[in-house]
View 1: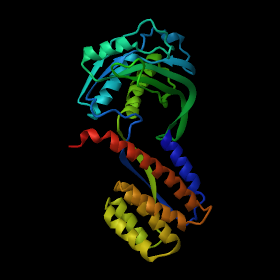
View 2 (view 1 turned 90 degrees about the vertical axis):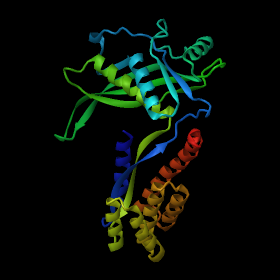
View 3 (view 1 turned 60 degrees about the vertical axis):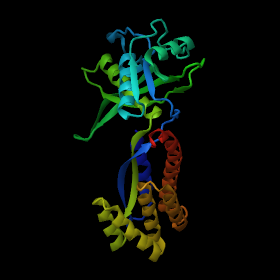
View 4 (view 1 turned 90 degrees about the horizontal axis):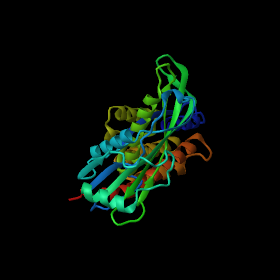
Length: 330
């Protein structure tokens, strides 16, 4: 969904650019910081299922609207698998047995009692506990675009909201609570069932939670200027051949020797190059230079402003990430 919104926003800006301006999309992966940070001393973690068992009648579910509850076992296993696969902690221990059978399905205020949390951590031999405590699935009618036939078909959108709480020994309340929503979509077919939606959404909830708890890889979407003169076109060829150093050499020459729009575009592209090299200060320098060269209110100025917001977020991410990755330093 975020990628779609990004594309729509940039396409709106592209409509403001002169017809002779060529923008090319580019994507790359970058390690992102988690929403929370854990001390380096935390080496072993436990994953527990603190969701109640649910007994739903599949025939009673209205797929077009309403609120469903997820499957705690599936969500907990997906959370444990995702955390283990990152290798961020030395040991990941899962306890997917139902620990709470009496809690109401939507009673989100009830946390694991401190004594129980301490006992679980001691029994599992872990420094910290992640508890999957809720998965809510809000359904509504939607549409799904089928690119192979260029048509929209009826679908069900599910807004999936997991709740994961973090417990540490000797504390009366959870240390953190993480609850971030995401949307998944199912084509509305006669075969679509409650069980399928709950299973899909619960697995997605566990995987989604990992991205907020542990540093993770994320695809970033950017654009670069292509064309305008022979050197810019040659630089674009280098980019498509993954020869970034050669492209940057040409952009440096254009930035140093040319004026006006070409210099602005070269500066913008150099910002992307240095972001790719993880030299965010240099990226900011050239992006600010591009902003100073762009005509106020132009499509280029809006594109640069949008990129400045993206780069600012990456700089914040970088500071948190350095702290979170210290555990891997020799």
